[in-house]
Amino acid sequence: MDLVSFQEAQTINHRLDIPELSLVDRDIYAAYGEILGSDIICHRPLPAFDNSAMDGYALKSTDLGKKLKVTSRILAGEDTRTQEVLSGSCVKIMTGGMVPKGADVVAPFEVVEVVDKDMMIAPHDLQIGANIRFKGEEQAIGSVLAKRGEKLTHGLIALIASQGISKLPILRKLKIGVYSTGNEIIEPDQKAKEHQIYNINAVGIISLLQAYGHQAQYLGILKDSSEALMGAIGDFESHDVVITSGGASTGEADILEQSLRRCEAKILYHGINLKPGRPIMLATLGKCTIFALPGNPLSGLLNLNAIVIPTLERLRGARSFYPCAMGAYLKDPLKLKEGRVHMILGRYDNGVFVPFKNGKQGSGAVNAISNSNAIALVGEQKSLLQGHIKILPYVMEFSDTMGAYINE
Image 1 (cartoon, rainbow, N blue to C red):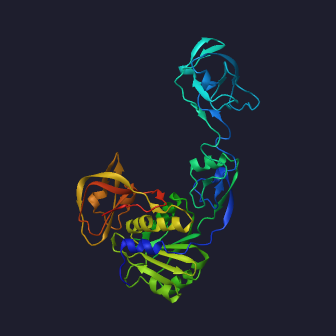
Image 2: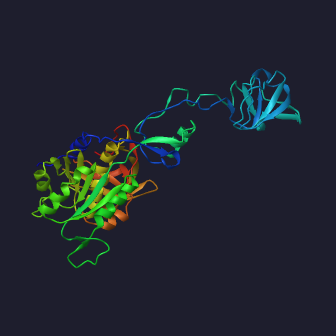
Image 3: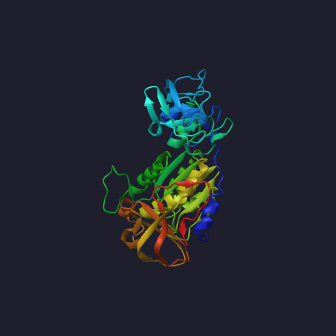
């Protein structure tokens, strides 16, 4: 199968069928980071009543500049619906207090001339409505507070709480299974012989998935045999997504693709024209999406972050799944080989991006991941990266509209 470009791979990823995701009720205190399962409609205006934005005096705008009698005091939480401000008078009001009938301006304490304890003069240059938050000015009844597919941030949760909602309908999480493959792989709690390698990949994959709010089940190590692979593939359809590491290249022992084909899986691509991580494979088996990542730790985790994670955001029902780039300055120019997309790990601090080892890390370099916090993607036709560039934080934010995040 021919290599596909990075952009072609993204297009194929965005055509994958989204799983059927049932709704689950979640307590609002435990809903952070979840995906909202239905629209939330405003049924209580925000603010719910006219209230003061400042500590000051509520009065009629026609009485600005006049000497007024202070008749009472209003605190936040008091019901003043039966109270009325008459001409020649005013009321002291605290921030959040309900503005009484008849008042259409609030004069802050610091601009008022206090004549004595019961008399004051407000400046006449205040505008009608000054320092008043009017009922429904933020959200009117019937407006959409939050849309299905939005990720529940602390701000969005606070907005929803303004409606007196304590339970939220959220989309169930994707059921993700993670395998490592290879005869040389052993678990961290075993004693490695000289020819064996500890299972770095599964730990790194699951940890990165958790950073984005996903839950994944570790399913073990698959040996390089058709029997072992065929047996595991038979259970793939019990998951929405299966992620493997290793067994995705074209070496003699890399038999994952042929095992998938024997199980009637559909191979959508096997190999992307990029560095590192060229042998990544995408397949589907029934309703299960399968990502086979390279076995080299750096390649696998970079592929997971730049290619798989945005796809998982879409598959989990999120409205926003396009990576959001941020600007940075590359202090020293970086020369690259044209003809493929490059993924450059590095460190971003105080507006400056410094590539790890000047972009010359090997595909198996584990310490590159732990010492980096951002990625720069460079287009196929670019041989020199310099000056102001676009980077992706290692844990990305997402937008519901596609923006440029590859340095072309």
